[in-house]
Image 1 (spheres, rainbow, N blue to C red):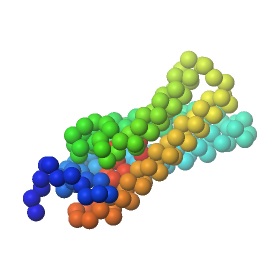
Image 2 (tube, rainbow, N blue to C red):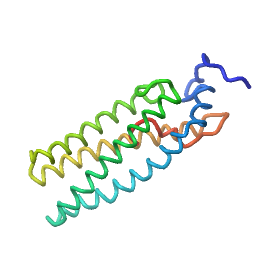
Image 3 (cartoon, rainbow, N blue to C red):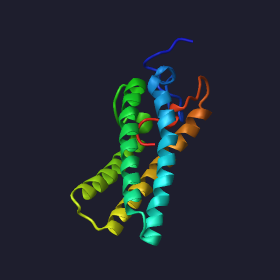
Amino acid sequence: MAIHEGVRPVQGDLYTPLERHRRDASPWTLVQGILAPVQFAVFLVSLALILRFLVTGDGLFAANLSIVIKTLVLYAIMITGSIWEKDVFGRYLFARAFFWEDVVSIGVLVLHTAYLIAVLINALQPVALMMLALAAYAAYVVNAAQFLWKFRLARRQPSGRAGMAAGAGAVQ
């Protein structure tokens, strides 16, 4: 079967045949497939540390460090996801198939970055910092759910490998 550039996906499909081919050939597909569960694991550990601090008042340094690490992993997945999106769809962000996921990803980045700035300039008290982090994490959970939904849709799309990149694109 020839792969044609101008063919749009069938209603409900995420990828044209060419985009599916690009997705499967991109090395960034594997990178996204690795970074997404790593980020989720970092999120779970960090969430536990935040909750520990909020409940006991202990472990502020560990909680803050875990949030910084989570944010750095988020930046990594956003940058590599943008490169993946360029490989597959020809644009770094806001491709048709992942437009709303990218919109929410930007919000997630803004909240995480606000946390980093607040830490750097000592703008918030510890509990307020943790609340900001929890807001960022809530947005991350929404965004992760968006990407998991797209992963599921891509697996259901006929012809071609589903690949691990259905959830790739930005923040996972």
